[in-house]
Image (tube, rainbow, N blue to C red; front, side):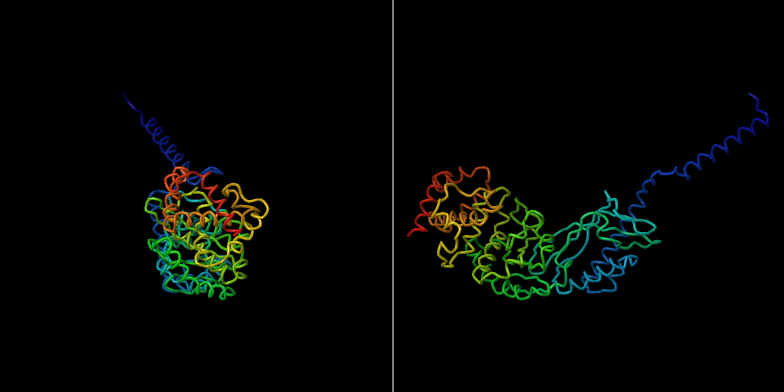
Length: 419
């Protein structure tokens, strides 16, 4: 088939125009169209740059290099820059065995604010830290970091615009740390007196807990004394009514297979703990440190009359405090309407909380009277690991079920309070 010169020219012109229009369509995005996702190479380069930035930040913090630390922060927001400077200073006295960051850019967060920058990125970031003399394994906590690129340089622009950021004690003020072979006590200016009282009690508390439970636990405890209710809520989480507790033991993660717990802390409420008598503070610390020691052997859902009662049993051990003084609400109840059942888990929350704790303490005193202290510990280990078969464990251990335990306990109460 023959082609004329004019037809060839027409075909060439049409091809050129089509190619131009196709290229234009790729360059000019319609209004409102989304930006195409970056290539794998671009993503890798971005993650590498941000990881290097966080490595620089962590090294500067560990080396106490303030200028190097602040060089990782975007100066565009002077308020955030000042907060980061305060953070650096607040951590000066904290004994850090480890401090670093892990970055995962697989599912970045959409930031809630958009500071001026050539590019913004909010990957998943977790702080990885470990306190010297306390933590055998590091804790990991979420950090809602937003990073901004200016030219070829990435900087930290915000810790509030990209999701939840965990707040440690150093986010709330300068940290004052006291140490002993039994652990450390961290407080803020104004909390030094309570911290000193706690430090004086810490070695004996750890020793008493070990005498009862054994020594197969770290035996070094971090006690935190927050500066106020906001910090208390940040450290213990929303599950606790911070206004009604003097202290609480918390953990970041529990491994039921290895029987270990990571990131354990005893957090004291200064509003309640400061006014405690020496005896009450001693009981509180031994109670909470018992929770630290047994955490790895305690499953979620084990009965609270066992968990809290055992901790109070250790707390009051060898105190020679009469039952009516140790359990005044229960003493009153014995004179009016003695309990007919073990305290339920719900009783440990709300207006009956004090009575529930005192009843649980007396149940564990009864079990120690019945089985001896080693027998009580052995029963705890079995019950705390078998929440679904409480009656089965009781029958194998004391020869009766919950109903039989209750009857024996009620008889014990009459002896305790009316002898």
